[in-house]
Length: 311
Image 1 (tube, rainbow, N blue to C red):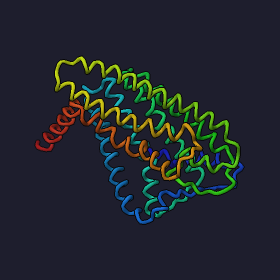
Image 2 (image 1 turned 135 degrees about the vertical axis):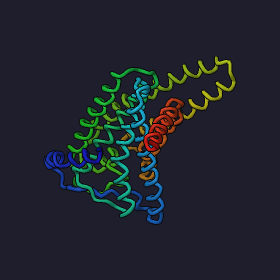
Image 3 (image 1 turned 60 degrees about the horizontal axis):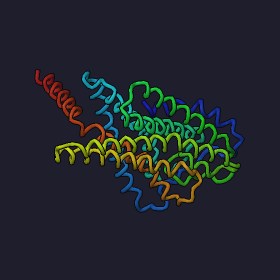
Image 4 (image 1 turned 90 degrees about the vertical axis):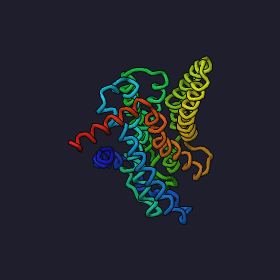
């Protein structure tokens, strides 16, 4: 579904990109071209990660859709999170796999625009969803999260591609993300960098701070538990949740607070992989598949399927 939306937008976006007075009509994504000896191994690793990510998130979406007992705010949050994770994986991973199989990949400006748009849409939406989940807020937050993602994606992508690109067209990155594309702009990007800093504070740092505050409250509640076994189990769950959100928000903030930071291209690639590759892979396991109610619902659906085949 997301790939279909991605390609359907290209026709419309090509009209926009044609208005940009840039001499660049396509970009070249370099990926890991500095390490040609690792291309095959990385292709296999990323393909497995992509398939496991899709499978885990599809299972969660299907279980919550089919099991009426899970139609409550918490599991609707988890379902939305799985849609977001599956979406960002579908936008990024196929392009990365093509790059790894060819070492480089040419992408038209319209295609680059579309990929950046959806990365921002799903990324910002996930930032707000995770922040809302920490305080167990209700369904209205779903709409706010998605509207925020669409708004930021529209503003930021349009602004980036309004800059002229008149020099090199080689993007030393794995996909069309704002910082590496912005480095190719041959215009003053100071105002955009101020906007990016402010926007990152609001969409990344604020939700992350709220999550940390919620975990402080949870920590005090755990310490009051009389059972040692209960405390250990709760600490284990909280530690895995906190590790996941720290990885996601930490690397995203390092990337977007300073779009033209002094990090090396390889460091930027690794940071991008943390929140676009690892987070969608880990979220289903950390938030859903370890959940006892989700396990019971999965077994219930499995037994129902077995009974249908039996009779």
